[in-house]
Image (cartoon, rainbow, N blue to C red; front, side, top):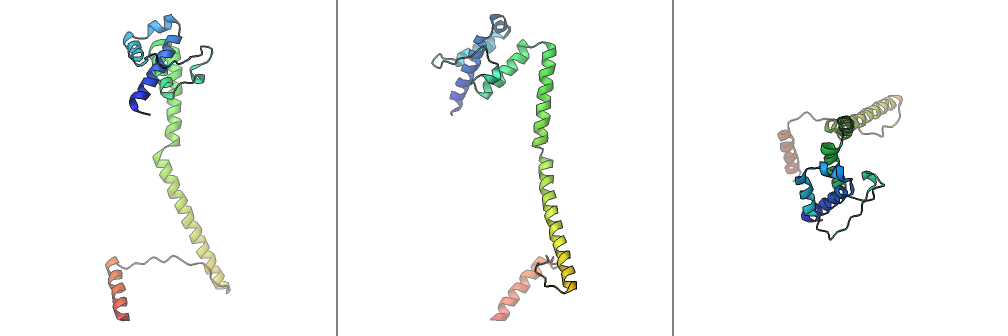
Amino acid sequence: METNESFEKVGAEVCAVLKSVPSKEYNKVSKNIRNLFEGYSDGSKKIKIDTSKSIEEQSISKEAKDIIFVISLNYWLTEEQKKIALKKLKENEIKMNEKYDIERIFKSKSNRYEEKMEKVGASQELAVNEDEVGKNNTSKALVKSTGKWYNKIFSFFRRIFKRK
């Protein structure tokens, strides 16, 4: 959906919600805000608002619901209601930060890597113990080479030229 179309749709939805509230509440909203959203409502799109349902139950976009929340926070809610709404908003933000915490995500990936390495180490120890008993070794141990990288390259080319 194009940006202008989405702005028009959201603006028309917000305007429809504003017009569905009682006139006392409607007049509390700044005239500039009302004019802004009425400018998006061209009348070609009829949006029906069921006043018996809450905003969450309405069939309007998430963006329109967010704008209505901000309008209600700034114009309609009492101080107590604002505190409760802001507290819930802060709790949701904390939950989202915990869920998508970058440090925790990378830490869990490194923990999984370490667990895999521990499993590999445990299987190598088992293989060594099996060799001591006289059984065949079926696992391969990881060998870490301590040579310099350029020495490895030179030795690789030496082996190739010695073959010819």
